[in-house]
Image (cartoon, rainbow, N blue to C red; front, side, top):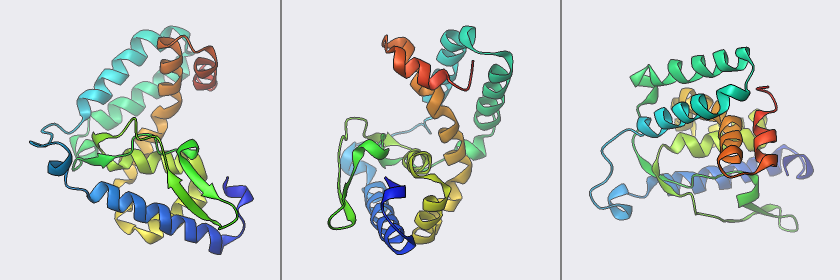
Length: 187
């Protein structure tokens, strides 16, 4: 989508829209969504993901890919300061397919598919935005919302798990294409 949109002024306008949307979404009080809130920091879900990757994907992965995955997960999960966040309402699937763009108006016209919405780490949504639209556009987002710079370690970690998550989804759901796409750089 981004390469077809036009120059920097239009991209900055879109970054303003998306950064504003995420700031409002992440700013909804957790108590309004889930009375009683959430007590853990979400690391259990990432430990579970790591274990499922090791059990199910490692037999299909080359040694260097296994070593990279081990460093990626243990480096993040072993540092409680990196993994710590304030739980927020997140979209959970904030990629290109769920952001609608009106070409005639030159603006975002909607956000769809809240089926993965949950209480979690707002850095997950920013990681999806970075993975979908690249670093140049992401800089416009951080210009608009500099607070996101505090999430960069988590954003980097989450972004690094996306292909593995896709491969695992493919394996667990008999989706050969998703498995192949996710495993592309790991075989």
